[in-house]
Length: 369
Image (tube, rainbow, N blue to C red; front, side, top):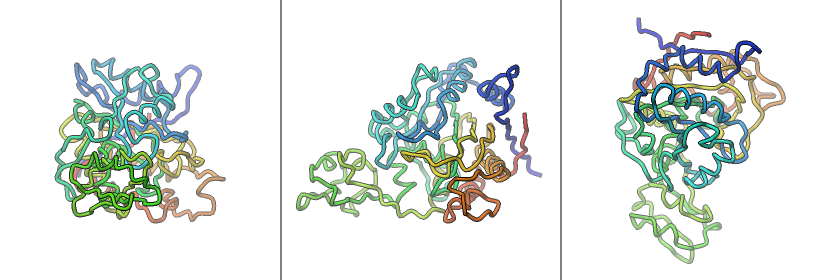
């Protein structure tokens, strides 16, 4: 019989004499084997989501501080990281990304470590990384700073997601560590489109196109789909966000591709994963707002297996009572809250593919602290 992956869990209950939630997180990490990794004189990337401007569901920076302090105590050099977004928002380049992180409370002072945007200023600082057992990709386009780290740690706010069903650990790694060009491969059919009513014909996007795929005609930009390489550089440079990705990606294919990108990120180096199950909103933290939580705060999970961690998180969520006066009001209760929240999405697709490519296991042993 195949050995089950170990997933460690603690709830949010605290006492005056037993310490608070942050102390419970450190105890959870220790019990899960965090100290088994060699951090001595090594760089450790702590991957998390800093929250979009206007969103309040993201993790508080104090969680990141606990992880960073633990790394330093074990002799490592931690840094917080995330990669730039493909869509137009408050995190589409490193300048805006860092400003948003600071606005949401993430700084070297609050987290006790620096913040590095993984794919650089414009989202083009990437490295091609082999995808183990990849069916859709042989190589993934990952932010260089993410891959330069010796140890990789994911710190995930677990929640729902309108396209992938769940915004869990595998999604945090695979989509979150992709460069802008990588996100083009994952999240769209790979070629941008021009919203002509928005385009001002300034020509800035032409200057950054290495493939002569942008053509100015009648003071409006057009994309030569045959020449376009889908790198996404023009999207980031447009001053009025007239260039947009084409979001015609089938959800199942998106799920499977994301699992392959996650596999590329963690393969061949020590990695450890933490999920915080609080403020469980129905949609991604990438939006400029968040809906009311659909479940009560449940607890924290830690494991060396990101796939088993996501399975455990889903099981815990589906055993919890649903909150009222939320997105779930009036929706069918099939026993799977994430399926009921977004009927077209199937969170199992990501994890089943992750198991298929040996990123992790479905079978897990939940060890409750």
